[in-house]
Image (cartoon, rainbow, N blue to C red; front, side):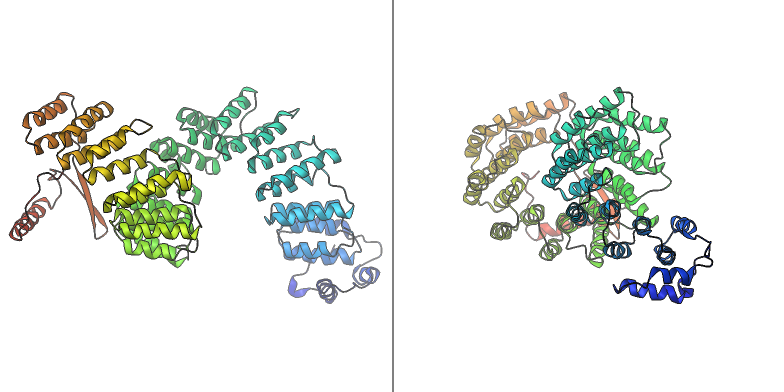
Length: 632
């Protein structure tokens, strides 16, 4: 067999063939091509050419083999088509397929598989399936799995159900691969009962069928069912593989089932699983969601090769558990490792920046997002709005919001909340009006918390009453405890303490500590001891260990010069062993965060700071400032 020539040394005959092929012109007679190429009449080059095709590692080599097949007068289009799909050369494979005068079921199956897997063009896969049926060819056990996969990815359950029906007509309803694909398709489309019905009808349940069911439950958020299916699988004597453990770990994270999660890691270690794969990432994510950050970091540090998803899982674990600085530290390690962040990374890091007040890093992420044109992305843009607003840069938050291409309800909520918390109540309510007029997103419960918060800060009692009343009537949003807390706070801050108490008493549920705390603060400000005493009794029953309740109660009595009651509350606090939580604040200077606690003199510049504060206090008094003893 002759060795394949490089492209630059291609024979004139091959160049003529290729030009005619791609221009759709009739090919020269194959006999002429055979005679022009064959070195001897007794030599059959076909076996060697097919062997060369199997060895091809590039699409360019496959094209050269194609020329050899034509010259050898061998109809090897199906073999070539199969190899081209494996090499992911869609253009050449599609061109070859379109020139088949009558493609058989094998050719259709190869193209359907390529469209549903290598090229991820799911509509094309379903279109090829329709063409197969119209051509008179019969689908077989190699057709259905990939057609069902395409329907599942497109979330087309009706199409998938029609394909399911056709499996009975063709007699392939009992094929194992088809059944597994049916379970996966129905689960992806949210038809878990249909998926379970297919599973229950299986005569033999192997690990693949169990994995399809467990993965389906986990993907739909049915974590309890996923864990139960996992336990039934192991009870049946089947050993879980990596895919089983990944799905089960996701379910454990949803449930917060740390004990089962630890068992999964033990099973992975017992079977010598490679934690550098998605399994390691799943364990990091599971431990993070269960709150065991030490275990998550142990698995993370033990991975020699870390994928972007793994970095995101570790950063997210810290961020979701309130450890913003640790999340930022891992992000910096990720940068040092040379891993490029994606949208998920940016959203998570921005959330950590907002929590830690890391303005410098937040601005850097903002710059990167703008450079990569991601600031207009609905998730990144919303995270930027939230971060800038919480770090005090409201102007930049508004700028990002107005520059977003698309906005969902979370985006609107973030901006309305930002304006409300910055005391820009009028602008918050105007933006709420824009949201209603745009009709791009329907207001939800969080939207109305933001709107009522704006009313609280501006003292707009009538406006607050209006929107509280219209929540359910006009928007179908049932008031929750947060909305009642806003209304109590609104009435109390307006000096209507008795009315706030009556409103709270009429609530369908018992008020929680947030509602009672808002009313107690108002009682102290308004010096309404009568209502305040009722609130104190309830609060100390609900939260006997919260020092803030004792402090505010004591100050309420002190503000009314009821010194004995004030001392009694302080004594009760000592008697119960409740320690006052010191106030804490921080500021970032030159990229470094400085934290201060009430009564803390541990800062290296503490003496100088106190000297400056004393000087400022004296200057304020010179300008007529008088301290208010009623402030917390």
